[in-house]
Length: 308
Image 1 (spheres, helix red, strand yellow):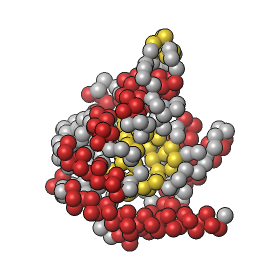
Image 2 (cartoon, rainbow, N blue to C red):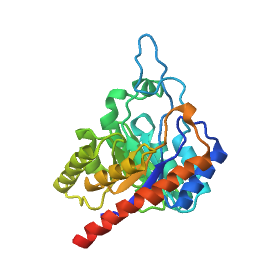
Image 3 (cartoon, rainbow, N blue to C red):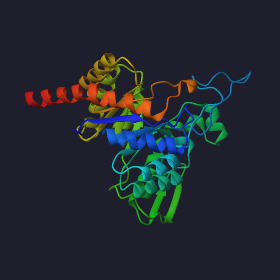
């Protein structure tokens, strides 16, 4: 099974951090020892209209840096931390272009990129981007096949329902053999089964408890075994909002660890745009996670290994 990993959410959503602040934040998080830093994705957010209900909790003006271009920039600001999308709404994007962008980030970062993807939920965003909302499941599966074809074949040939590529070139290839790991988000049965069949990892929902993680991870492991895949060679990742109650945060981490999670992340301390804090104060909160939460997870892991 993969090693334990500690991650954090890049504050490029809700808060109006500029490029220098984002740079200072990722460099500070890297210096603290975080293994991965992840970034959310949306291109558009919908305003409420008389004939359009609110689209989840995010309505109207919502600060959101573009995911792939921002990660490319932050890759140049860091040296060893892994950068990840969590998650890119893949079926509303053209997959050949995503393949090129992801390969480029992988090259520019020396293989420090993971592509977290999901099927999305905001139907007006799909409509605005000319994408079919109802075809999300089939499109995301085909898109993953397109990505891997572009990353591994030369020349590239692909014949699918939505994409056809005939003897084309995409170079440079990713430096990561086979291309960046693809990690699926979502805890629905269909989403976890899809991850078990075609992904390299799974990202759990932030507000789901350890019981949910245990159920989903158990299902993924069983589905992987049915498909002849090794469930030990799979990343089980989950994040929770960063809270001030460190004892509660520690217990939450330990609960998910018992459920099989290997990649632990903390989100932003608040998703209220007016709750923005400066970089130095934010990094102090992350330092507390490193010093007062993460050691308990590593100690539990050491005890489990000693008992084996």
